Image (cartoon, rainbow, N blue to C red; front, side):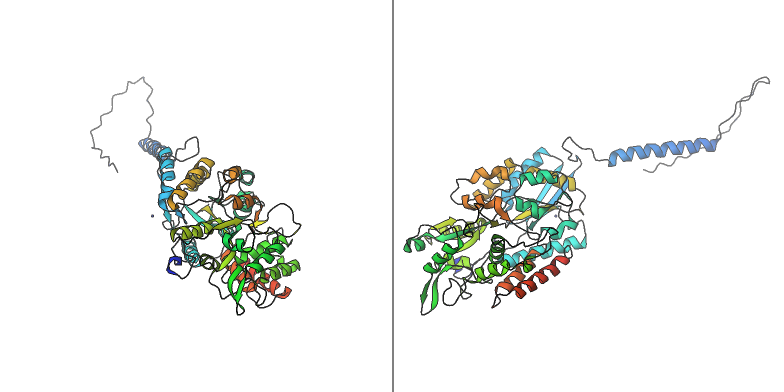
Length: 486
């Protein structure tokens, strides 16, 4: 697992046949004088006909040998080996499902490896992506995996390197998976599905219940104005310096989901982040300035709730120096595990992301997750998509979920299918995240890691202006212009 935290120590973290004829003495039979002589077939013609028949037999024989018979489920019955580059999931979590699939499809062998390196997330993700890009660009079939995982904000960058789904048509995919997955892993214009998520995730607020109790509050408010007031109330200072932060926001470097929070604020303020062609347009909307200012208001020397002096938000929360922060269910699971493993005793609560006052009941959120894609340079794309279709059916997802929970001794991941939402309606850890998935948004960043860096640079500028937002949009457009280029 990636290590997102810093000090103290508990926070570190693939017959040739020669025919020889022996001359013989040939004595022709005498022909009766009144008989009509029989016309002989030339020897050369017999040889030609024989050769043609021989070649035809060879062609039929070898074409039948080379042809790959198929079964009713369109799975080739010839021996097939699939290589799968996974992330986060330990091989022991995946193995039971692979064993089950191989038992049902005895001609298929699936080789899984968790290719996500240990270490801080951004660094590990960059290492993984660099290696994936290298093998795809080199085009060597020996090195390229049949199935590989990508973060949702990278997915569009790989569309030229993958085989569109042969098991999910666009309309079926759209009806089964959450809207963000449809945005990230399919194309309405091409009616094509390029990948499929094995899980999904979004944002929520986690908070220190004891700190809120001190302020006579049981849970955070659900609108941004009241939420900010509480965050200020929970912030404590000594000689002007913040010793207890109310809410981690306002800066980019030490807030894990800074770009996602800013994008969510723009969306909540009605900003059209991209146009119908997927081109960034947020710089033209003055409400993007309002969204940026709202984010940066939490970083204020006299009236803020957080600053760049703090460690990364998760570490500060575990050290009891932060009351509230934004996280995904995946990172919440890690924080909860640290809290329990090292007996820190923090009573952690989960609440929904705040919305604008007067906003509709739809709890707008932001999606953050990974999906699986099938490399088009490999010969068994049909088999790979058959496996992914099987793996993302509800029965298999529930088994994968249980294996993951048993392995980590914690709750597992959120399902990516809308028809499985009821599984977590009453789950104390996941129900908040789960309820927001239908309203979790995304847009095709293509070069997601680099795009997020541009947003962080914008956030960490000293001032707020329309021109700086336009400059960020221009930089992001330049990145998108290079989509599919590694």
